[in-house]
Amino acid sequence: CISWVVFNHLLTKTKNQPFLFQKISREMKAVQCGTWGMQGIRPTMEDYSIIDKIPYLNTTVLIIGVCDGHNGSRCSKFVSRHFCTEFQEQLKSLPLKKALIETVTTLDKRWCSTVKCFGINDGTTLCVNVIFKNQIFTANLGDSRSVLSSNFCSFDLSQDFKPERDKSYVTAIGGFVHPLIIKTPTNIIFSGSERVYPGGLSLSRSIGDYQQKNTIYLKSKGVVRPILQNTPEISMTYLNNAQFVITCCDGVFDVVSSIELQRACLVILSIIQSNNPKKHELLVGLGISQNQQRYLSNADILSQCICRQALGMGSSDNVSVVIVIFEAIWLVQQKI
Image 1 (tube, rainbow, N blue to C red):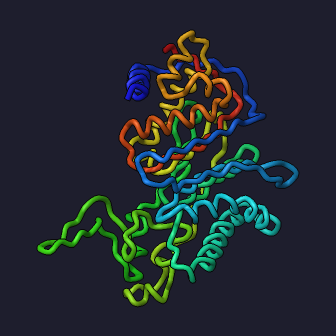
Image 2: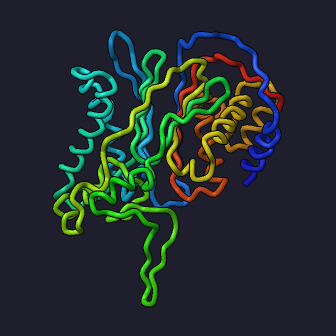
Image 3: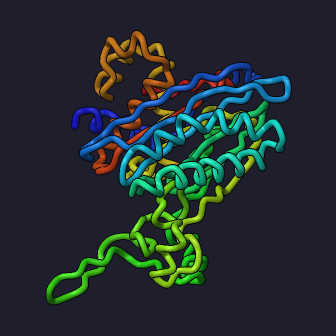
C-alpha cells in the first residue's frame, strides 16, 4: 500500500526525534470537528458517529462520539440519532455526569423494549465526549476509545470494556469468560481473544444486545442477571494545553496503540499545517486526493488518513474516527 509506505517513513523518521514547536496562543476559543468511516473488508458498515452541540448553562457544549455496531447497524444508528436529544432532555433535571449515565441507560432500555418482539439482537459500543468549557466528560461502554493529545503527550480518556474487565461480574451471575469455542466432530477448539458467554461477544458492556439482557432467556442458561451491563464509565479531564481529542472504534486500535495513534496524528497535522511545497504530494500519498484537499477541513483530512492507515495496516474491521482539533495552542514545526 503506497499510502502506508509514505506514512510509515514519516513516522519512523520522527520516532526518536522531539517535536519542535512554537508557542502561539494560550486560549482555546474555537474547535474544528471532523469524522470519517470506512467499511474495509467487512460485508456491511455498522459504525456511526456523533457530532453535535447543544445549549447548557448559558454556553454551548460540544458532543462527539463513535457507535461501533455489531450484529447489524440498526442499534448504532439509533443511538447516534437519539443521543443528543435524550442528553439535552436529561440535562433539564440532572447534573452533567448523572445526565450522561441516565442518557445511556435510557437509550438502552428504549432500544431493548422496542426490538424484543422482533428477534433483533443488534448492539453497539458507545464512546462519547462532552466538551464543556475547559473540561471534557467521556462516557464509555464497549471497546471504542478516546485519546487526548496535550503538550504532545497521549492520555486515554476511556478504558476498553473487554471481557476481562467485568469477568468477576460475569462469573458471579452464572456466565463465563472464555475464548471462542469451536466444536468439531472429534474435538473442541478454543480460538482467539476472550468472549462473554452466553452470547460470545468480545465486550462486556453495550447498548442493545437484547438477548444478552433478556432475563427469561438467561435464566434458562443458568444466568441470573443481564450478562452485559449498560452502565457507562465516566471520566472528567481538564483540557489544559489540549491539541486534539480523537475517538475511534476498535478497528483502529486493533492495529495501533493510543500512543502510536497520537503520534501519527501529530505527524499528519504537521504535514497539513506546513508550507512544504511537497505537502499536497505527501497527502496524496496518504490517500487524500487533490480535490479533497481543497474542500475537506483539516479534521476531516486527518480522520480519513487514520482510517486509511488502519486498513493499510491490516485491520479487518470497519474503521471510524471522530476528531476535535482545538484552536492552535502549539504550532507544529516538524521538519519532514
